Length: 314
Image (cartoon, rainbow, N blue to C red; front, side, top):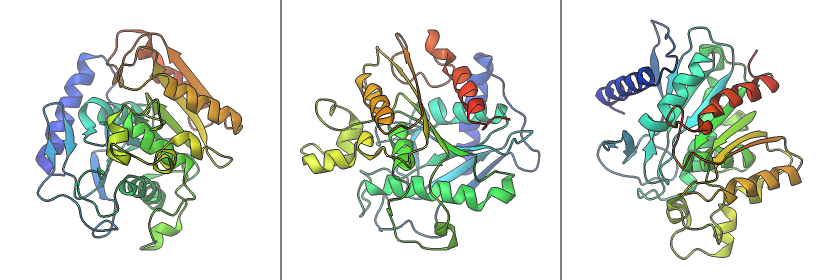
């Protein structure tokens, strides 16, 4: 990601948070925002888009040839860390509206945030949709590999995703044992399992009748087989190794059916996975952090209490 984009994106978020009266954390003078490459060279599988990253008017990005982690450092790190993934139907990634505000909020809680700019399935990657999971798994491993550098407790690393980013974080949590790529270095010897997952209005299933999302089109196309639809539906992978999940969705969501979160809630309970599901009557889709006047705007406070209950916040 070019430096000028990072500065512009950061300035936009700072102004937005100030207008919403959300606490903006001070950053280490020597660190500030640090960017880490996800892979030591070309990502696995080959292919991908040409040219530079593209930013639209909302601050969402696409044409991603080099996935990265952008590190948001709290003034007083607590040892906890969270991987953040914005949504966009796997066609773009909402950095300015979703990922950056979440990262600043996390940093204000003393949690080191890593914003993931991940590869998009429709951008000519030879490996197809699995590139998203490859980037999710690699990101958790890179975070663990840099634990000493950033003062991170390797047992307090989580994920937070919005919409399609919620699907990616959910799959990363539920499919941590799945080998999505062949190991390429010592980093890949580390665990890809997050210790907890916060999923905010996530896409959960791409199976009928909830197969109307852009996420479904991006992952499995217009005429998917039932096997492909099941493989990319999060609830089919929830099992004993899945970490605790925090789940938020509004009943008036026009993009992702609220039934999706209910499906995941039921799957977690059936697998005896700890799940905290907050269902709000009003909020729509894409409310992020601080972007709603309804009661759904309370979800960050609820998430903080949940993190405290898991001993992530100390």
